[in-house]
Amino acid sequence: MVDSIRAQGTCVVIPQCRNRFDRRPFDGALFKARHLIENFFCKLKEFRRIAMRSDKTDRSLAAMIHLTAAIINSR
Image 1: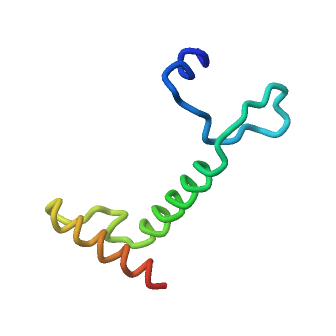
Image 2 (image 1 turned 30 degrees about the vertical axis):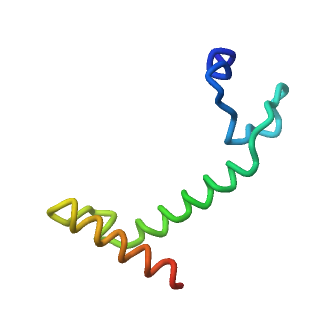
C-alpha cells in the first residue's frame, strides 16, 4: 500500500513515533507549514460566531472569517 501511494508522487508530512523501528523520512518544511495552518484554524475557532457557523449566508460567513483573520493577524 505504501508503495502505491509513493508511486503517485506523495511524501510523508507528519513524523512518526520515535520508538518505531522502520522510521520513514518526512518533509520537515511541509510539516512546519501544516502546523502553522492548523494553529491558525484553532485561533479562528476561538471566535464563537465562526465556530458555531451562525451566519445565514455563505457570503456573510466569508466576510466574518476575513474580519476575524484580520483581527488575529493584527495581534
